[in-house]
Length: 137
Image (cartoon, rainbow, N blue to C red; front, side, top):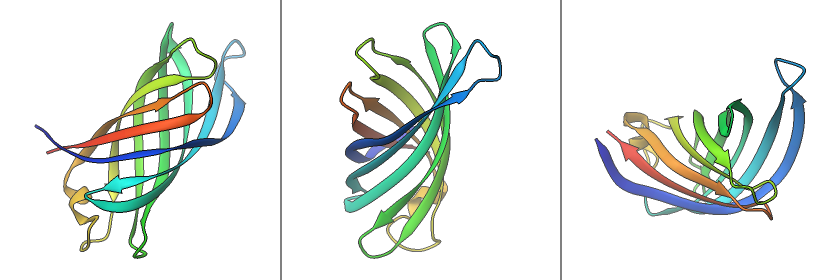
């Protein structure tokens, strides 16, 4: 069941790299983002890298991983995948994702060990990002 919204972040694409695809007619794009925001009511910083490619016409598929950190020093790692589309405005895209998080057994991020996180990750044509997350119990 989809639960409460647990966080939102804003940030910037800090790196892009074009990679060879599995077939010479296609390419993959590696995207690295850095974001700041709030998770479970606490200020958080996140950095992640994902690789996207066009799986079928007009559908992007991506996989990625990243780290989440609180100012207190508590941290977690995430791994996930998602689907999306280019919006037609430069390099902007809309992705919908799910991630599994490994967090400490205790602390503010501990609830992430018991849920799948689903969300929306949007990138505009200037590389600005908006990410919203919900827990799926």
